[in-house]
Length: 283
Image (cartoon, rainbow, N blue to C red; front, side, top):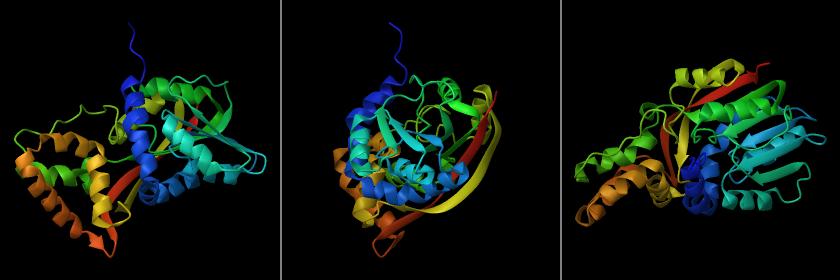
């Protein structure tokens, strides 16, 4: 039987990831909102344009895009998670020029040259076949259509991604599993050369990656929120099962102490870095 594209991602974001993100919407928007602002600035949206938001989540950036292309343009948000799309529809309320759909951007059927711009806030790193996905998105773009998305740089540039593994390491009895380089997930596009190669192979041109270091708010409501967010992130989900019952309380206390050192008032922050990637659809 042929494999279903992105089947594991669809299962995770439908059953676990999507509902967890919706429950903690304010935390994720606080953390990622400024990154979305950078994506929109790079996309240079204008009145009358049609824009596609890939991996739109609960629709925060889609709503912003709809306002940027109003009154005659349209923003369409697509996400693989039904829970996310349900929340996005509710969030958009009566915004008239916005649409949402549950679909996979790698395989969705879209009439050619439909969109003037394709945007994404951390939503394009999860494809089984990124070249096929970006070919599909290029086909859906008008001639010279614009692409703008954000993706994480390396773990070395994002300590918030490393902190759980670093703190828990003394309490583990086996090594932390490491995904293969480029595997679908948050760090799939950390290598800028790989991003350029994938986009070129998919027919995109004028590719640029802007280095965007930033201070990231983790959790948005103190140490408790930061712990929950980090333990539910990909590294946390990989590491927590490696803790024995005897060591778990001590490990959690060590993580709490570490986060406390990065707390100012009720805000936990860590240095991070993303790529703001732009390109144009080739002929």
